[in-house]
Image (cartoon, rainbow, N blue to C red; front, top):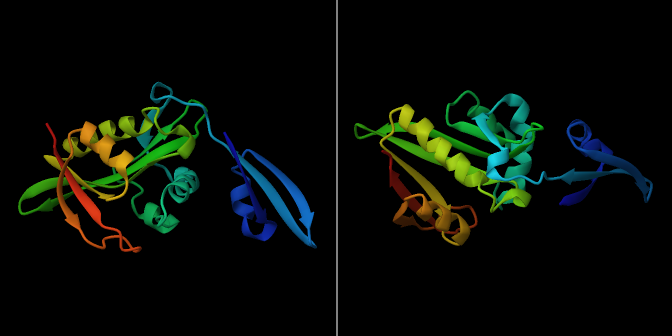
Length: 193
């Protein structure tokens, strides 16, 4: 799977280094670069889940932008660096194919894990990568004292809700107009063992 993106050279100078293939073009007096981003052919067995590093952030932001209509900015991910629940799924050749951002907070004397963001590269979905990330985040959250975990999901995101139900999440309530585009969120909760 490959996606071609055309950018003016002045808008992509720092990102081009990390991409697989680039070609320069002239059109209407402007220099453009054609960037082809290939996604690895992976299964969950081919990935390792580890803590996120600063060097991973550009790949994480690319996956975020390809996954959500209202993506988190780079700075938001940067604030979670060093958190035990900020994890990435990495292939043998060190390509990031997914991530999860989670933390533990204490509310009313109870430690609750919160999965704030999770995504898998569009070309790698349906292959167990999201399941590996969820499973590892449960272990990480439990080891940091969480006895349950919650998350928010768009009411319209049936694939995500189905995955979360498979992992024991139950719908708790709906928050009207949670997202900037006024879509409702479903709060889902799961007990940790």
